[in-house]
Amino acid sequence: MNRIQKGFFMMMNKRFSCLVVTVALTVMLGAVPAFGGHPLITDDTGTQGKGKTQIELTGQYDHDDEKGVKSENWEAKAALSYGLFDSLDLVLETPYSWTSTKDSERTIRNNGPADLSFAMKWRFFEDEGLSFALKPSVTIPTGDEDKGLGNGRSSYGITTIATYAKDPWAFHFNLGITHNDYKLPADEDANRRDIWSASFATELQVAKRVRLVANVGMERNSDVESDTHPAFSLGGVIYSLTENIDIDAGVKWGINGPEPDISFLAGLAFRF
Image (cartoon, rainbow, N blue to C red; front, top):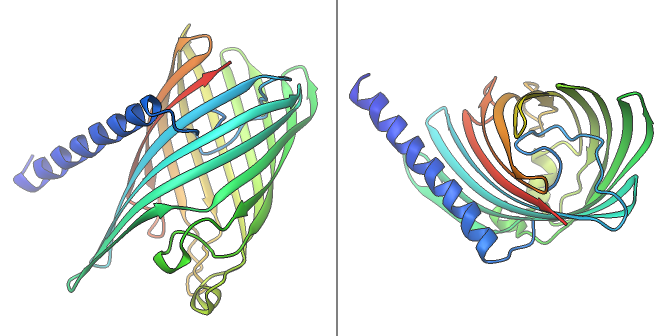
């Protein structure tokens, strides 16, 4: 391993350690959180149950180097899920982002809250391990669009979710569409409004408290000048400290240019 490779891996280890610390501090400070099987991007059909709550705190670090432009993004996300009925959850999600973009001439840094989102997940079918759910969602323009932290206008979408579970395996498939509106004319000109997405995930229970997870997915490129759609692969682990507390970690790789080269994810979820 040469000096450049050693430097890269030392930097990644430092970044991932900071990510774990960030998540832990967020928990101690009592921030409000996503749900589902983080670090998976693909959602499952599971709901909390009537009157039950899940709080999830997650952190993610993205690194990308594309055509001489280096970008880094940190995101701390807090989500609250509440079971209105056994098969219907209400979900409130609040992200905060730190971004840095560097080229040969300058470095641009921004940070602040991103757009808040509200969703409902309704599991409408369940039989012998196979279940289906719908998840409509809407975003509220709480992020600063001038800093690239939001759209400046509300957006909305819907995701169809399928899960098949048979111990020790579980499989999840998502197919979604999102319609984005933009406040800034420059954003309107540069971005597509309708974005489709598709992803597949699997979980394997390898021990009483340990699940290994894998995920692949793709979505339509929002950049009107590109027809290469961002695609990713992901691997991770979920460890159940107790029946109601999970911790997780994962690594996500970009399969093609529009997706960040590498991302590190970590999270903590507790239910009551």
